[in-house]
Amino acid sequence: MITVTSDALERGSPVAKTFIGLLAAHGQSLYRFIYTLLPDPDQAQDVYQECVMALWERFGDYRADEPFLPWAYRFAHFQVLAQRKRNRRRPAQLEDDVLDLLAEVQIEENEQFEAQLRALPGCLERLKQDERRLLQLRYDGGVSLTRIAEETERRADSLYRALHRVRKKLLLCIQRRVATEGLP
Image (tube, rainbow, N blue to C red; front, side):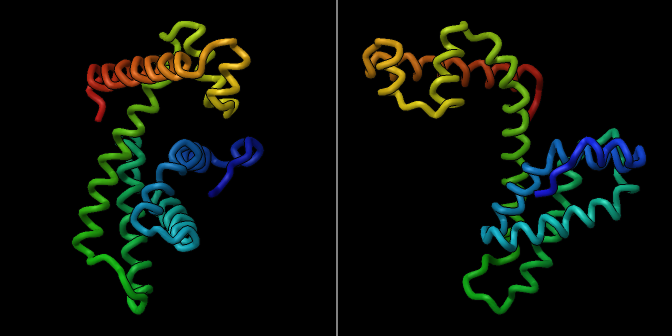
């Protein structure tokens, strides 16, 4: 992945700053898209780099009033197809029409995932403090439920049920927010 330092942004032109900002915000989604279509990590990384170069070369064609990610996905799809042509001699490749279908599905799923990620912070804010704390202990710290139970002096099975309820509450909130905002 390309990492961007604040120093590089300060020295860059406004166009470069815009491009780097969009890439920083959406680079992981773009890589996930490529990796889904081309599951060899080394090839996916190479294609990602080629895609970034192609995006930069054609960035003058990008319309700022359109979402960046779908535009970038089209470039990535073509880069994946080009990589597949180079790999023709390798066995067990999917047919191009199957790959096209996979790309379409992946774009839709990535858009849904991005919408859910945008809804997550607001939904986390709506949780009670003890619910957020339970999620933080479990997922930020990677602490096992058994250990959390020991630290909080609660039974593991009741803690598991509480965590299940909080996750369900969070999921319902995210689904409602995505649905009400008309996001994919």
